[in-house]
Length: 165
Image (cartoon, rainbow, N blue to C red; front, side, top):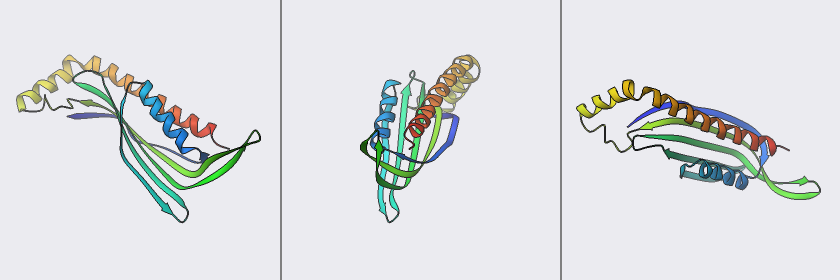
């Protein structure tokens, strides 16, 4: 199994007011629409005197073929999350105030089942295939992954800006 990183721990950070439930649904829906299988690897929710501390670790994979997958990992950390009511056009709406940080990694995952890593011979064949036979195709796949990654980054930024009161 080999990983070619395009983003590694790209950071977005904001002190903002937002609804964590809406954000969660929005990102989950994005992965669904873009054809990713999605797993929440970890969820931590700790009550602290200054507000809740929440850590969420997501892993999303989009299998392109038997050899290559797109992988996007999103880790988000929410510090000092406290409930707040805001006035939106005369209507009181429940929301959350916090400092939020997203770390995003994106990479092409090759040979996830290890089929081409079993022996030195298989590894040599895989390396030749990657470097010479499929280089152009793999470059185009990298462009596709970059496009998806930019899209989700813009989605997160738009959500955080739209919900900034």
